[in-house]
Image 1 (cartoon, one colour):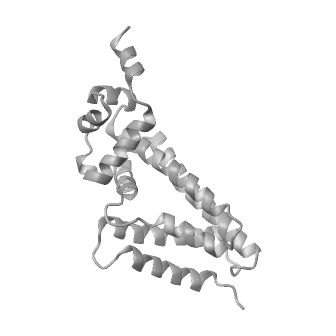
Image 2 (image 1 turned 180 degrees about the horizontal axis):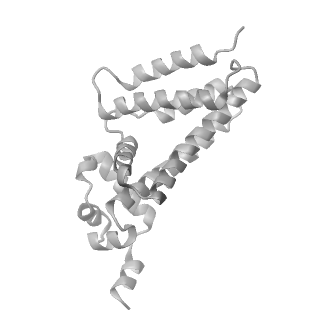
Image 3 (image 1 turned 90 degrees about the vertical axis):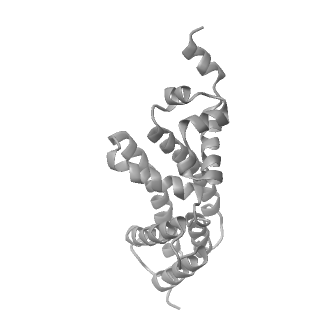
Length: 202
């Protein structure tokens, strides 16, 4: 058996590697995530990790996709309920906004997007797919609220674009720990924006 074949046989499942990467980001910060350090966590050499992921950029993007998959499942669960659209929209916002400074998912998201300046077309397409999933779910939810009369008549796609821009801006402030901007303040600002922009006329 060749060395490469042994490596494939003995390697931990891909999800275990990605979960370990996210745990390291949460516990130590992204700057401490190295291929050598991650390899020690999962019992692989940095060379074997590079064999599977090709580069640290690819590892980070796959970790983000894995994390987004988990968030996507939670988002689907929240949005598929039978409650008022306004309640499900509040749950969407709560899931979107970082838990706080150095939130691991947002830390990773920021790093991947920062590196995307030099990314190839495949990586850019995969990043766009992540953003597109959040956007489509939000458009559908707003459109449902409008059709039910819960929200005032708005262009769902246009409103979703503006809302996500607001969420992204505030979320970056929370994730980097900008003074004077915490999660509670952000949620209050967003609630006000939604009340002003979507509240149905009595």
